[in-house]
Picture 1 (cartoon, rainbow, N blue to C red):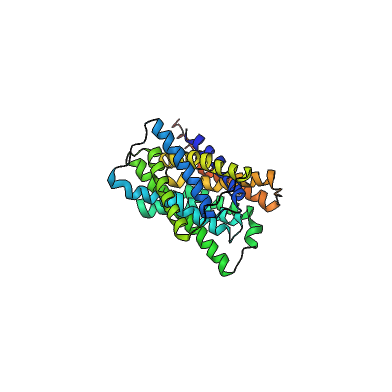
Picture 2 (cartoon, rainbow, N blue to C red):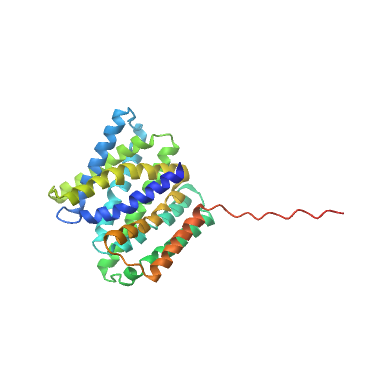
Length: 300
């Protein structure tokens, strides 16, 4: 079941980058994010209510549920959208892939779980692959203060995502229902997004075009409801460090989509980067090699 959740997460979230790009236009980013998670929350709450699987979290857990909502369904996306306006999207993807290292470090700092050498090596090899994949964009990185601010925002968004992972893992370890907790956390994130839109006085405009509407539906249903439930279930089974390796593979799917629909041209560096990224995947999930000790020689 866990490998299926991993593949599902990579395929869904790897294609959401293209859907997000399709939403860029007349609707402010904050409003698009609000629409996405408001629709996702309504669908998830309705589905769980029909199945009578919507128990509210205990009162003493609402604070951490709200924090999970802020980390996974509000602050991280705001940071990524702002960063995407200052940096090439490939750079943002590379920074987001650092969730693997953030999760391993947070697990050590917050839970005392020292990351294994295998996890750290796989994450490092995967990141080298991503840097090769986006070498041209990294060479063209804006060195002005705006570029530096974009990089800090991307790092902040990735760290928020990492903290949200640990909050979800904590809730699952305490026996809280994954689906209902995620739904209530999503509601908290939507409330925070609504407050931001209200305070900033942003108009609730909507683009009725098939492209924007289709992208919104894809981001809300597969991208948010299915994708987040699959990923957070993976976090509960594998732990944040291993589960977050999916973030290293997201850009590979995104590049495949870009090749098919945007005319992306593969260079020698990009091919080498693909080999490194897949090599990190083999290190993370391949079976460790055990050397068998030779049998002692017979006395005779």
